[in-house]
Length: 529
Image (cartoon, rainbow, N blue to C red; front, side):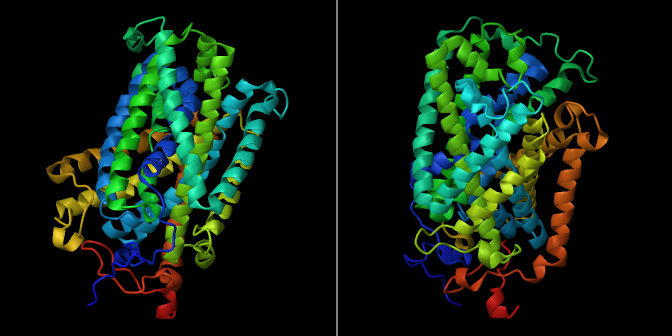
């Protein structure tokens, strides 16, 4: 057999059966920035603080370290995989090498759908901040009408998605440049905000142990409302796999991507946790109802504590964070669509996997994702609870797709198929060593528990405002079920019969498949299918 080519043109991609068609230009900081901007603490914390606080009060902040501990287990597993397979559409490609074709395709499918929905959910965060900077950003109505908030949010989000589509279609160099500058601004703003809130603290950390009557009347008491409030943290700390999904465009990806994943999730935990703590300690009045309302929240605390000019300056930084987060989510969705399409694993694969010859980026995928992402927003334009509904559905799908990687990885560990033997795997950029099994077990247990908590059909999440209908409350379960079952049928009945690397993306010299991985099928063109 021929050994895989290691030519400079291939960039090492022929090891995985692919030609190097994307622009490999991302450095260490840009890789780290991709993971940080997807997690985007200034987007997620400011977007959902009001929800967590309204459910469980100040003590909801304990969910932040709990979620970090669980997600760190997942991130460690992903870092190990990124050290072996730094390939576009990382979750899909990892699952492809760890399990059957059906489960691998389903992992990619769920993450693709969730990323598209999440793109809209992230862009919606502009509505929580822009009108507080300047009332002129409330274009639809004056903000007092029943649907003004949701309608204006959809308008602002649609404009943001259009801008993101243009930037991502232009090329990865422009996207990562804007993203890196934005992340630098976000990190500096986060540090300054922590210092400012700490300087204005009016109470001690003992407030974190004050449940303040939350949970009264709930079946499970405070624990019940804490589980609901914990979703505010669960909605934020994900997407760290983006650093690996951009692996084909990253320099020295087997070493860079694992470090970027772990640094992104750790930095986000530290800065995000300190912002949460600072906000709770500096809030003038924790009994102010605005803290638990979508048009108040943490933004309201910042404006109240720091005053007009300084407070609004920090809100501008939050808008910057939302912009770069939107870019990162869009970029990750593009790489997933591209990765599946070049394997002929999507309808219209040849068109969706097309790479612009000049900019060397999947421009068609960028446009298609941008258009599709607006659809769930328009459907929910008359739904005042649009933020929690759209966010919940997208995050459930992400946690499920992560499980479709961590579960097969754990199975392979028990069967002795992972970690791969050095002579079969080649050079690895990161290894958990003897800690691999316990970390993997914890990652699976955490992922399963969090998925159940997220999808549970609670009225507070899926049907929090009138009309109270059963199909609205069960909307998350119904949507996730439809996407999962429908996707499985699509693959089993049609897609699997055409699977194979498209000729224009296949490596010039066939590579040995890695041990424990699925054998790559011949290209559709070569096999005559």
